[in-house]
Length: 306
Image 1 (spheres, rainbow, N blue to C red):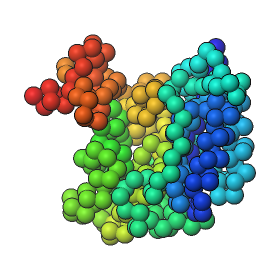
Image 2: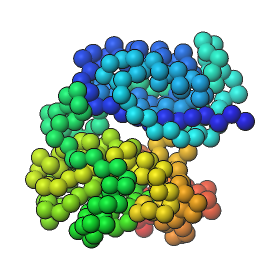
Image 3: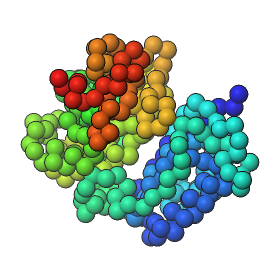
């Protein structure tokens, strides 16, 4: 059975006419049966897409023909399934079942930190961000600086419930927009003189987060190049990463290595699990860690708090 491919990538580069690029990207994806999410802004592009291997390769070849996106770096993974029929009458390609639809949108910010005026982007990427460290360089930093090194989670707090770097600082944020207030609160001022390694799923949120931290006086800020995905590809379950990686598609989470740790705890019974599901309260957008046995009872934040 054919397995769909899922790609994750971003590019920070000036995009003079994001709306024109949106129309082109939408038409390109529809012609290839690709589903997923593409965000565009004057700052660049961020995409997660899934589909048949040949369709994904054709998409990347065409996208790289656009100057600002010519050097895009792609992270690959396997999806769970393909539709039985072509995605539309206009394509021979089947769509990935990991995504319900294709969404291509334009926003003021590529990553919604709520601080568009604070981020500067040029042809080289984000201006004033943290120094990029590949996974091996991160290990070298930890070996040379020991407990002085701080891992700083750049994701929403619920994502860290099933996986995080050992000993990481996990800010209590429900959305990316909460980070600015968190940094301005003074809670992390004691870290300003220490080496701080920011990390997130694929690296994009840390491009912005590390820049915001540096502008607020953090002296030695790094970002994990390629994010958790690249680190886990390199070290599997034998490195500093513990648990599962939360992903925003039908897979829910991804494991790496031969013996991944299970660090999540079911909100209802406390059992070890990496499974997550939406809060039963339809007005709540929180994700809860819920094991298979407790899932049918549809726990909510209210019952969890009780």
